[in-house]
Length: 575
Image (cartoon, rainbow, N blue to C red):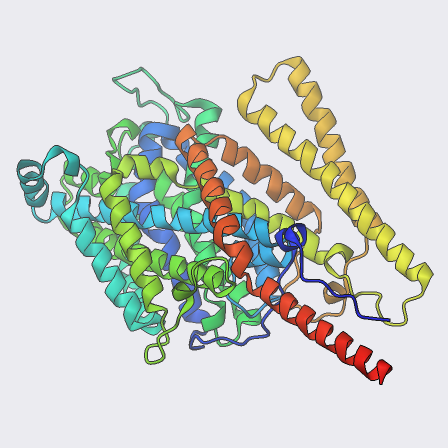
């Protein structure tokens, strides 16, 4: 009787899952809790608080932007719980990509990886363009921009020399090593916090409460605390979600963390809470300080101080903006390099992107390629276009992360749970539970997706509301049945996790719903960009990754060994 092992087929390859590496890594483990928190702060504070927030106040939500941040913060809090739960399980480089690979399979991981890479690649040039605009406007009086307009041909319309130079600096610092990035971020975080305290102090002392509810836009007559209505608040919340993309930057440093299972959940929670408080306070202060329609694009904070004649605070906030956006861009490149490294290390991207230089312990080719893509992005797109593309990928990976927690927490993710002395009866019960879990997950996901679509695209007429009530009942019923009928796996109950998400599966279920609603309220550009991520991810996966996957290679190696053993066994039997 032979072993009869075969190499994995196409369908098996698409849905095969990865296992944790058990802490083995070529990267240097040198980061403790404090540098990890600073990494999260540096990534989340930069563009959102200084660049994106004024834009949301001016054109999307008005003074109610602080409510948008509270709403996006509540949704992000559920995602923080999911990330912390997953970070406490694994020691390899984190991110939604890895967690998807562990739970949903290879093809879902490939698409999720391109969501992340695309989002971060877009964020990097957006940050450099925002920083370049502020440097040119407030430090050198528009000299560089005027020179470019007079010397560059029309086809180089979006070329920004300052932005390209800044991206090259990011590249050089990342080639030095993660420790250099960490030390630089600590220094910059201090300057950022001082500048935000100064702005909020001036705004709250010199502002006017009437700016919050009496301001009338001269262009369209909009007025009130929420001049763009509830839709504007929700749309603002979706855009504001860009602020929390830095959550990903913390877990992507798992392989460079000294104690990832303990420190990553703490760093994720700590940086998130600090940033949420600062965003809500600053968004409120902006609208309190100056009429919302007067805030200007990516120079809003500094411009408002300049118009009101606050010279010293203007220079302090200018310094804070420059350093903070620089730090955020630096962290963005660091994060995308780690995500690309993780995908390439698994064989789903080109192998040279995971090659680590022995002297610096940095994937140098990876840093170079990501930097070049960022430079190209700053040339092809302008700031406004890039800002509208942001948040879609972040919301998508947050949805995937919540689903990953649900799958990894129950029997479906624990196929060996009943292997010891398994009887036919226990085996049948295990299969029945897995089948029930799969059915209940489908019952949950389908109503949730339809509910989010109805809430985003249709008027709330009586039939629509009735349909939403029915779908909500179906969604809640499936979650209740999962909670009551499906046991948590052994890892959840034996106390080995440093952090375990409370309220499973309800926290994850509502996280999926809220993130989907915010996702569908984004502008069309963001949704089109998501479609591009999916298409590119599938092309790269079926054109390269499916053939060079490390998981597939291990299975094929095992299959070859088993065939050799079978042939040896046959020869021995004949003899």
